Image (tube, rainbow, N blue to C red; front, side):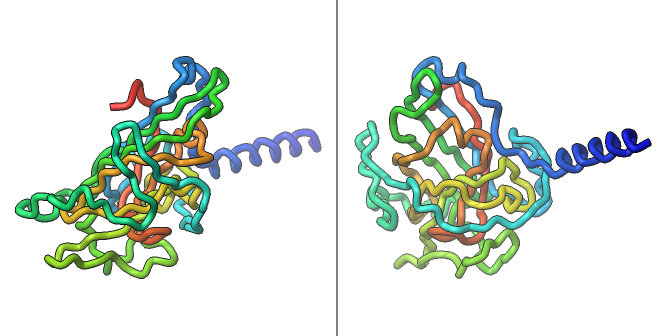
Length: 250
């Protein structure tokens, strides 16, 4: 009888552990490193309150706990990329967009959407031999309502800056979060894991940036979430996506 009770308790403990598990990482695939370069991509979009994370390739499990959005100062250095674009350090606006077409207004129909591309050189054991290269192509980031507190993290004080023509321009934070779980307006992604950088949208509500991140392994963040915040270091979670392996950089 004692043996039966011990076995039953052991099985129940396993069930509890499994039910409380949350998606974190894709399986480690050494074959992804055979070419010497690892590629990944992340399709970002704005999430509603009833979004069940259906396109979350990290799985569907876990509670929707609020993340502790403390700033991780590792990484986030922005540098000159191979395409010759001068990616300035955090806080500087993107002056390349000074001649944008204002006739179109803010490009925010349908909320935040776009793609983030990653690439990194690795050795045969998938250890990084270069900094992580990131390319961000997002639009619609100026369309949010700062008075809407749903999906808001601690430390958010509101939205952005009004430009001379009345259009809102924002400094936004882009972070890797611990869990590949996009439910509950991205709150289920959990706390910060890595800071990618801070960016300012142009007058049309777009972000187009190329930069590099130190001390970050692409293989180790595949399967985790990327979250776009309404402010530099934290703020409301505007949109999110899960990083997945890709055949090549688009």
